Amino acid sequence: MPVEYLKKATLTAKSDSTEVNETVKKILADIEAGGDKAALGYAAKFDGYTGNVEISVEDIEAATALVPQKLRDDIHFAQDNVRRFAEAQKATITDLEYEIQPGLIAGQKSIPVDAAGCYIPGGRYSHIASAIMTVTTAKVAGCKQITACSPPHPEVGIHPAIVYAAHIAGADKILALGGVQGVAAMAFGLFGLPKANILVGPGNQFVAEAKRILYGRVGIDMIAGPTDSLILADKTADPMVVATDLVGQAEHGYNSPVWLVTDTRSIANKVMELVPTLIDDLPEVNRENATAAWRDYAEVILCADREEMAATSDKYAPEHLTVQAEDRAWWKDRLTCYGSLFLGEETTVAFGDKASGTNHVLPTSGAANYTGGLSVHKYLKIVTWQESTREGSKAVAEATARIARLEGMEGHARTADIRLRKYFPDEKFDLTANG
Image (spheres, rainbow, N blue to C red):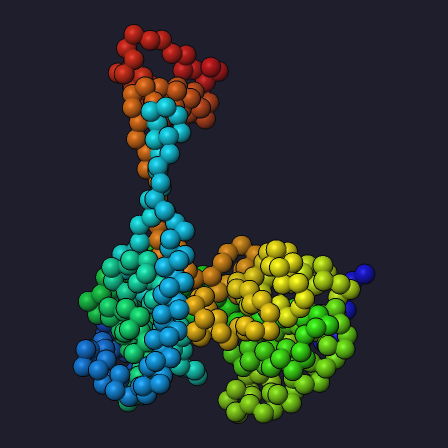
């Protein structure tokens, strides 16, 4: 029996990719050609900012003085949670060596990238948590140079709490640059910086497109679209909690999808009744986003049972997935496609977004089908190595020569031949393609 849509989205979260692509390509080309001066020009044009781009030690001290002590304590609490979780993740990757054949040893080694560029949104909302999420994980990974950039406000600069959070998380350099110009500065190594090996962090469609275009020249965490969230709720769920969580995620942006999947019609109906009232109670700037997101992008889906609910969720592959249902262990074992999973009413996406320790830079637009989110692992190169005794190389050389000749790669085959002749001059080998 097909699922029943009690509320169906009228729009999908897509932007005018052609127009955005052309705009971003031009900006990147201008900045690559014009360097620091061009980046400063775009900062003045788009952000109305003509102050210092490079945040000095004195600037950090001044910003720190503007951050209330309670907020500083909260930032330290969140940063400590993110750091400890990242350290635990890093511990799951160990260097190893393994004797594949007698005398033939191969190994694995993890090496952090040298330079990381962390983008921290600071337009409509000041994303203090993004500074913590991106910089802390790079620091734990062992990156030698970590640059953070964030959009400045005219005559003001970066929000003091963002400066403070990036600093205590371990940023070596903080730039007051937003948008494409900020991404370009890190990628091209402007303002005396080394060129970034990897660019990470959320941003608007122009930031996302800049990262997409630059991918290959630099690594990126992912190409992010509008944030999305899905809640799985059964008969035990509290409709008010479910509705509040949906509204909390809808405020991200006018095109941020939120989805409710349930097997209980009464839960669905009550949530749909509550959401508009909760949205109306938000401050105006938040209300505008949530109203549009709920009206145009939200869906409420009624399923026959929990298996159909799980299958529906996996099909959507949400960035954030919340389970407010019985038997949490079953859901954790069954669900396979999500960026981050929140089990039970006692946790919520906002906890992960801000302070609980898991990272909030996550795959959107169904990308959770094939990837996870930002973690300490994104900054690590897992490389391999090998060494061998002469006897250990013998069987490998024989197999290599024959396979290479079958493929038509004679030069490859001869690199094996020469070693067999040198190491085993008294032996004869059949190294033809036909064996």
